[in-house]
Image (cartoon, rainbow, N blue to C red; front, side, top):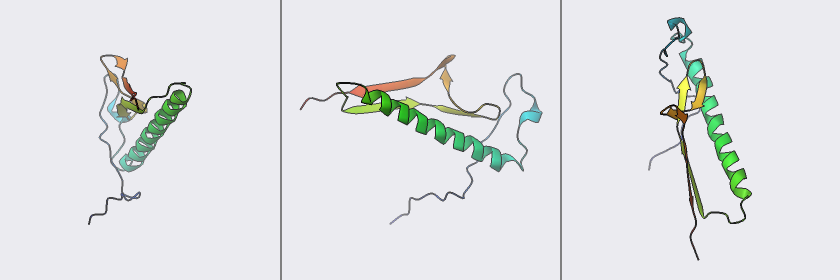
Length: 103
């Protein structure tokens, strides 16, 4: 039997890179990497929570609610901006799938 729990104290580190127009000084130092990564991860988790909550709130306003709801989006982690919904082809990308099944 395996234990699939994740220890909250184990750091998850992100690789930050320089974006066009940024200076190398904007990157976190090796010493600051765990703290910056933790901040980015917390912001990403907040984004996921907000997207889920807003999706459920919107679905709840429908009179004919779908049987299944699927929302797909990417999160980009950036040293300057933090965690943001990623874009594809210059536009924000959120894919929504609603499914109704008849009894």
